[in-house]
Length: 433
Image (cartoon, rainbow, N blue to C red; front, top):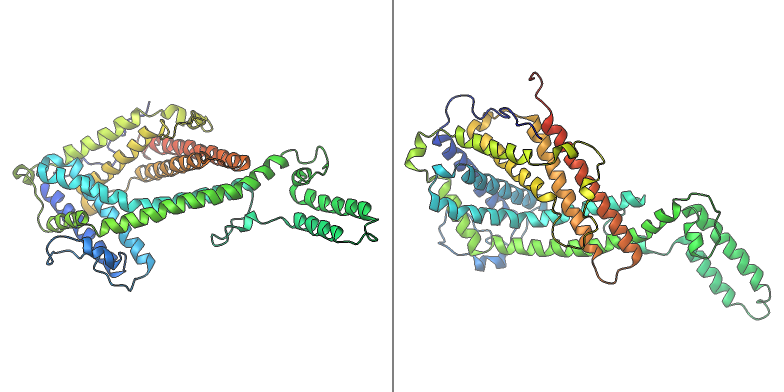
C-alpha cells in the first residue's frame, strides 16, 4: 500500500493563515482572468459575429470576447490568452471547492460549475491537437519511418518506385508490335527479376513476396510484419488525421461560440466582481485555512493509497493492457482512479498556493508526480482515440492492424506513466527517514 506523505508541502506549519489570504488569492486569480480575456480580445481571438450573442450591460468591467475587429492578432497571443483563461478558471474553481465553508455557499455553488464548463470547453481544441500529434509520432516511431510534413498527407500513400518501374515496363511490353513481341517472355522475366531484387533490398523481401517474387527464405524474418505495419500506418495516420482534425475544428467552433455567449459573459461578470469583492462568510475573517488545506492533502493521500502502486512499481507488468481487446467504447475501467488522483493532486497544489502565497515551497515530488499523471491522461486518451478509429466500418485489415499496434503502444505508455508516478510518490525527501 502507498505510504502517506508526511507534510508534503508543510500546509500545517508556520503562522495561522486566515481568510484574508484566501480573499487576496481569489482577487489575484480574477485579475489574471480579466487580463487574459483582454489579451484574447486584442489578439482577435473571437470573430466579430459572435458579439451579437453577448448579453449584459454595455458598461461592464470586463471586455467582451466578441468586440474584436476583423484584424486578428498573432495566433501565439491567442493561444497564451486561452491558456491563461483556463489556468485562472481552474485555480478559482479549485479554491472555491477546497475552502467552500469560508465562502458564501449560494454564490460558490453557482459559479463553480460555470468555471468548470469554461475550462473544459477551452481545453478541448488543444487536447485534440496534442492527441493527433502524439499518435502520428507514435505511428512514425512504430513503422520506422521519418515523420512527414503535415501538408503532404498523401506522400506515404504514393506508389513505391520499384512498383512504378514494373508498371512502366509492363506498359512498354504491351505497346510493342507483334514483331517485337517475340522475346517478350524473356524480357518480362528479366524485368520482373530486377524489380523484385530492388524490392527485396528495400523491404527485406516482404514487398517482393507480395508482388509474386520468391524472396530469400530465412533473411530478416521480422521484415514482413514491419512492412505490413508500414503499409497500414499511412492509412491509419490519414484516418486519425481526418477524425481528430474534424473534432478539433468542432472544438474550436464550440470555444468561439462559448466565448461569445451570454453564459460566458455572465461568468465574466461574476469574476469581475470577484476581482474587487470576495463573498467571504463573517467567520472567515479569523478562520484558519490550514485545516481545510490539510483535509485536501488527506483526500489525496487516501486516493493514492487505493491505487495498485505495488503492481505499478514493477515495470512491464502488462496490467494496463487488461481488457485491451474489449469492444466496449467506454473509457478504460482502470484509468478512472488515476484520473481522480490527478484532480486531487491539482486541488492540493492550489490549496498550498493559497496557504503559502508566493512563498510556497517547491516539492519536487509533487511536480514529477503531476507530470507522470499528465502523461498517463494523455496516453490513455490517445489509446481510446486509436481504439475508436479501429472501430471505423470497412477499413482495410492493414489499417486495423496498425491501429491495434498503436493502441497497445499507448497502453504501454499508460503503464510507464503509472510506474513513474509510483517512483516519484514513494520517494522520500532527502534527509528524512
